[in-house]
Length: 275
Length: 322
Image 1 (cartoon, rainbow over the protein chains, first blue to last red):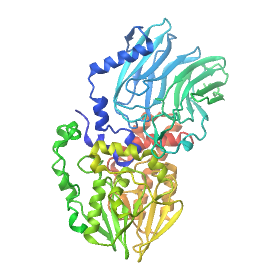
Image 2 (image 1 turned 135 degrees about the vertical axis):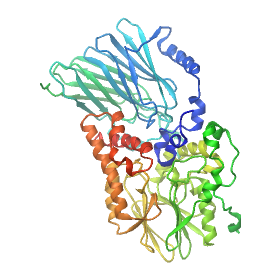
Image 3 (image 1 turned 30 degrees about the vertical axis):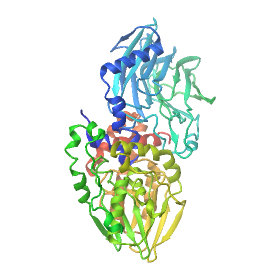
């Protein structure tokens, strides 16, 4: 056993913190002590429910996951997915095996995409394996895996009232990194949305705040799709996505919807390339 | 009479190794015998006339320390007793109540819930029998209803149900300012805007002139951010303007000179703000910012490595929307 008591319980002390790095013994007992074999069996089951009987081969070149081994904040775990930019990646799925809804996100790339580096922030509810599965243009599936220590990310109450959390819902911002002519542009998309998990309870009313999350988000450069994201409750509140695209001088369009019928559209002008 | 009924030991009923401690394996067994001893080593310090404080441990909650990590205490007024902070668990609150009844038979009429965090709120259950007024920020009820049960479950995992106690809600809420008269002194409460948390309540005692900023003031222990970074910096100005020269911080020594302590706190919060802003401006992603922001503050604060990264995570989310 490698964790220190002080570290383990740190969150109890001072805050929401609790929700975060804190691995409480109960949670630990529930999932953290599973053997690799048990985890692998669970993954088999999840993979079958998502991909049916299709074969998934391991890869260390077609996709790589970077995530903190121990999350500082279980309600905001930064994930980086790295993929080759040679046109062969059609889609990537992120699965957080031990989350209540394991299928966290699926990105389907369009012609304007550069999938080299994709970042998003997720909730992690338990010590868990995380899987990235890419689909190549020829329809084959490949997987990479990383283990992450965190707990309580999905049920952690937000630091504010539901009303407060929903303020400005649908607002968006986009930041563009500087780039040279003809090069892909790195962009950061920020969306105001609580992404309620449905597991956050109000103790007075004894009600759970109903799940309300971004379920579809499409980014296009002019007429060309960069990616379409299918999302779920595992994506952290106020989603932030870093991606890259091939610019053609036209505005970047973002269209988002949530599972309760919310619809938002925004347009952003990327800066002109500089030499 | 209660005086004799209260055990001198803080956390009576030292439990045999349970499932919980068994889960901690050998790491924990070595410290179990210190359960009682650690508590006995706590002493109340009289920081002003009739004002007794206990210094919290500069540590995180563990099964052995019963979450006794905050500075807690009480004020014995002419007519009655006010509890300034209740403690981190039912066990911690019961210990504090024992310290009170050792010193006075006056009734405990007020218990202050300074904010939502468990190390300050869970001692309140030990005072329910006294039927006091529980004083809290106008936003505390909402914050406790969102998080109280969540905190309680986590504490139960750690300490067991019998040591944890219930979530206690305020019965008197403060939206702006309020006063309580203990006969010989007045206590003035101020509800602050989002800062350390969204439910921070401070208090000034007219008898001693002491300011009780609770967790709006951390000393020695790294501040933990759970409200608003910009708001906290704003509220430190308000604390300065209250005219007190000495204060009782929520963590650290039980009594300090206010100005230098606030300067240290502001130094950290400013480093956190400016470093996070710079990271955002340079497109340094959150996962890298947690390892680079405010590093120059590392030697100045206990538990820096445990909390700084999380503070950066919280600050980043607030400041990236500026």
